[in-house]
Structures are given as structure tokens and as C-alpha cells.
Image 1 (cartoon, rainbow, N blue to C red):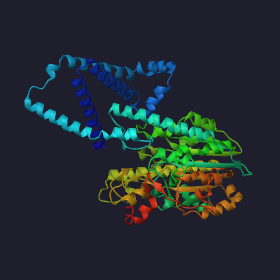
Image 2: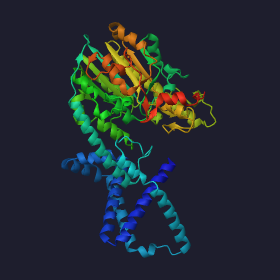
Image 3: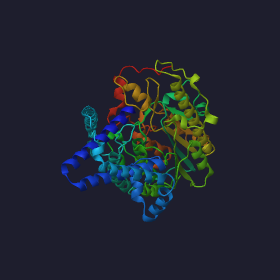
Image 4: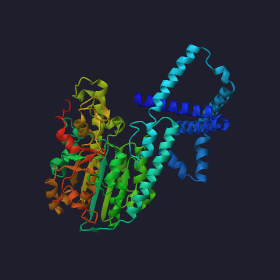
Length: 547
């Protein structure tokens, strides 16, 4: 993180140095005034956003500004700008402008007199600016990017307002183009035929940042998933062992999940049908409850994901009802759904839940008063880099996993007495000091590619069937049991759902359906260009997770 901050600061200094050179050689006072106006405006907006909303200039903010009408703008200004922290931001901006004016008038007094000091400061500025100029390639990456999910910022959105604004405007342009294409495809989707005679509930639950090896049902040595373990023993839960996510980030994963494209065949998500639209047009009631609809993230993934899944045009043709916002904890989302004030019902229902899961920071993902089951003393990882603090981080992650198990069980209980089948999996994996001194989703180190893929791309994938569903669909249960070890990637999940839902549609491809007798394993291309299975075959033997 410290390196990223230094890079952003040096790039900001290089921008300032470039503007200074333009002003100096132009000999035009209006050029100086223009740069001051741009700088002060962006500075003022950023200060206001940070003080009032704890945000900075981003695609979300510019989108909101663009969608705001005159009345809304007036109400916004009277509510936020002319009150409390809004007034403080105006004061800071006025003070900054005053300092600039004073500095311009007293420029001679600010000049450094001592030659030695001047040389030292000039040298530091030149070196830092040169380093910043070396990172101007970010602008080439921005304008050459074809998708808003291109993660060239890493884990940190740019601090300097100019770069953030340039990126935000370009991201909105890209997203708008892709969404227009996706909407056109969705509007042309054709209805299918439901073959199920009884009423039926299909449920898809998408978790978040779930490390497969921290799940009890996958052999973890701590009881992190007691409810899922119980459902497995009852014969209602079926655990798939060889499933991966196409990306280790949420937005691109969900885009390729919700559309009928196949990454292995080079198909683009926005050129493929949005499968909930097909379900709805075929007669299914669609309820979509997403706990990540409201987020405090400063990154780009939340803008990219929400601008897709909650585009007004897409919502209208794809969902019968959608929760307007999320909650601090996942079980609050499920309780809201259970209360039934907003959800729709019908003979054929497809309910979709997107959870916070174990998203970083895991300690924020569970109520500590009831779900703090594990502590540092329970963690057996004694690698040389481990500390008590890192062990507690692992314990926090395991507690979040334990809470996630409770949440999934709550969902299961809503359908236990119905003809229902539930598919649960995570959008991607994570790391929490499992095999190296790393937490989160850091890039692979040389020689550790296999571990990197195992922890960040392998995901838990389970199917739960109610007793009634099992009794009515013995053939499906037989096919599920025969498919538990098949290699699969989550971008093709829609074909499994079409099958489970008894939905005959032109978009169904049996060779992509995990439980179909016609299933054909295909290349699993992750992270845009990595052949998962080829790496797993060629890399050195996997280093086991440390005890």
C-alpha cells in the first residue's frame, strides 16, 4: 500500500510540474487561471465528498451528478453543502484559494534564498516528478482499456483528482456502451417452456471471498460449517470438488455468471443473454436480494457491478422485485426477505441472493456478540511469518465463515418444506496467510502460481435439495451424484440452473451443464489468459496449507 501511495503522490507532483511548465512557457495569464480553476474545482469537490460522504471522485459520483435534475441538485445543496461538514469544505476551499492568491502576490518572499537549499529541493522535486512521469502509462492503459473491470489500479484508486476524473469519465463511457449492447440483447430474448408440473423454487446464493480450504465440508480442521455438514449427512447437500471462478474479483465474475456466455469459447458477457430475463419471460417470478447494492468501497468494482445488475432497463425486464439496498450483516438481508414485505411469489419462483460473505475485512462481516467462536489460540498455523495478530486475522475469517454457514442455513430453512433446489457458491476465493505472508488477493509470486490459483480461484460449490425435490426428481439426484468431481467454471452456471428449473430454452447448452449426461469439460481460462488446468498440471507440487 505504501508503494501505491508513493506512486500516486509522485504522479500528482508530475502533473503539477507539467502544468507549471505549460503556464511558464505560454506566457498567458488565462492559461494559469484555467489550471487554477480546474485544480481548485477538483480539490473542492474531493474535500466535500471526503468530509461529507467519505468518498472521492469516482465513476459512481459522476454518474450521480449526471443523473441529478435541477430540483434534486437544489435539495442536495441545501441538505449537505450548506450544513455542517459541507460548510467546513467550503471554508477549506476558500482558505486554499486565499493562500494561492496571497502566494501569487508575495511570490518573491517565498523564494528560497540559499543556493544549497534550492539545489536540494529542486533535486528532490525533479527526481520525484521524473518517477511520477514514469507512471504516466496509466493514461494509456485507461484509454486503451475496453472494459471497466480492467484492474490497472491494483488495490488503490488514484488519489490525485485529475487521474480519478479522467478514469471515471472513460469508465462511464465504456460501461454505457456495453450496457446498451447488453440491454439490446436482453430485450430480444425469447421465452422458454417450463416442464415442471409441481410448483418449484430455484434458489441461487452467491457468496463472497470464500476460501474453499477454510470450509469444514471441504476438510478444514475447524468446525466452520456445522449446518452444511449436517445437511450433507442428511443426504440433502451435494458438495462439488472441482469448481473454479473465472476471476478473483466480483464484478467480472458476476457479469460472466449472469450472462449465458462461455469464456472458454471467447464469448463476451454483454453480447450474451442475461439469464434472469429468460427465467422471467418463461413464467418465473424473480426476486433479487443483493447485500452489496450499497457499498462504501472507493474502488471501481462496485460501480461496475451495480451499474450492470441494477441498470433500470435491465431491472424492469429481469426482476419481479429487488431489494432496494443492503444491510451491515447478511442475515439481516435474509430476514428482510423472509418478512415478505417486498418479495413476489408465484407457482414458479427463482430467488437470487448475493451476500457479503467473508469480504475483506472479515472481522466486519459477522456480529461479534454471537458468532465469535474462534480466536488466535485455535489457529494451528505456525509458519515463521505468523504473529498473534495474523492468527487473529485467520480466526476472524473463520468466524465470518461460521456466520456465513448460519446465513446459508437460514436460507435453506425458508425452503425446507417446499419443492426446492438451491445452488450456493462463491464469486471467488481469498488468502489469509494460508501458504505465504499475504492477506487478501495479492498477485502470484514466482513459483507460487499453483497455490495462488488454489486459494484465489477455487471456490466452494454445493447443491442443496429439499426432501420433496429429491422425491420428485430422482433422475436429477442421480445425475448430481455422478457429477461431483467434474471440472467446472462458474461462468456456465446458468445451464445448470436451466436444467434444475425444468426450463426448456434455446439458450440451454447441455455440454456446458455440470450435471448433464452430455457435459463436456472445456478449458478453464481464469484471469483473462491463464489456463487453470494447464498450470495445475505443469507447476511444482502444491505446498500444503500450513498446519
